[in-house]
Amino acid sequence: MNRRDFIKSTAVTSYFHYGLAESARKNPFTTAGGVTSLTLGPDRPLSVNYIMAVAPIPKGFDRVAQILPGIATLGIDVLDVDHMVNLCAVRAAVGPKTVIGGNIDPVAAGMRSNPDAIRVTMISCYEQAGNPFMVKAGCEIPSATPAENLRVLCKPIPYRRF
Image 1: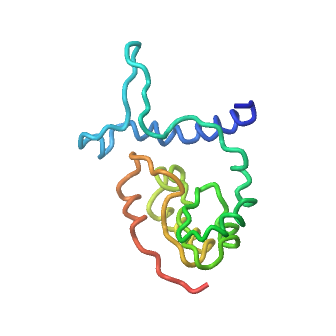
Image 2: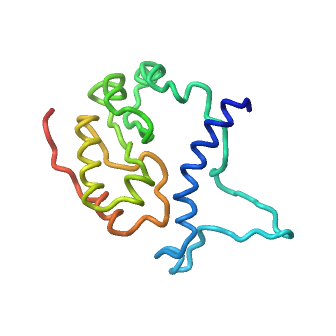
């Protein structure tokens, strides 16, 4: 990994660690017996059995708009869009038949937000993506996300013609 990639991956990781740290705190999932973290000690090395670790940002990830025309030729029915990607650019590239899903920042606009603000974000994403659209987070939702914030994500947005 070169220095530039390391700096990019560190920036992304340092941002996501806030959500991960808050998920390790007491929350409804942990109260019910769910495990969201583990305690390390000198006799217990870190072992990660799922994909959640520091990794270099793939070459070209910051230039997603440049690869969208290629993605559009794959005949994808549903495209999950990360919260760092411009929905208008995605729609322009993939056209009106592909369902676009996602783009809600899971930490800033999900876990740390409130239901009213999340609803505004959902509608904004829909307006940017147009039809067809699926409301969803642009990455994994931290387990410390308040239940009321999760509930608002499940409320439908009225269909609109754009």
